[in-house]
Image (cartoon, rainbow, N blue to C red):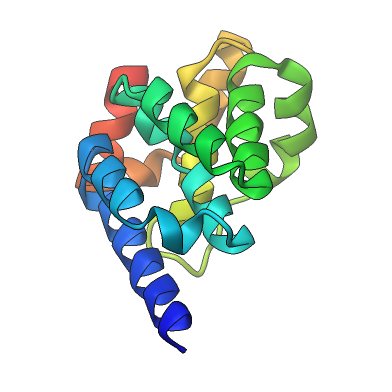
Length: 156
């Protein structure tokens, strides 16, 4: 029961910090909660999914070091997934259908976890300028949110 509560607390902290904090805040929480997430598949995926935030804040190596040290397979897979979205046009093409579908039930038409995927794509150069422009135009409502706008603006 204690482990379950700690996992939920960690999940909530990461979720909030991933939107309203920065990589420094996230790294501190990840380090302080290492024993909570390091052996948990779902929490590992959550940590690996933070890759675009760490990349943009120029702290990618810090995230890689702690994820590799945890040897959490799920965290490593998601970290590599985000790297492939940035670097590999084939990876983008595989995910394109998902990334180009908006969610009409959400005010910004995109969920927070899904936002992190186009953020990875836009941080790289695996897609053409035309495809980048389409992706930005498609998710233009994300610019209405201060956090998303702050993350996206330097990439356009």
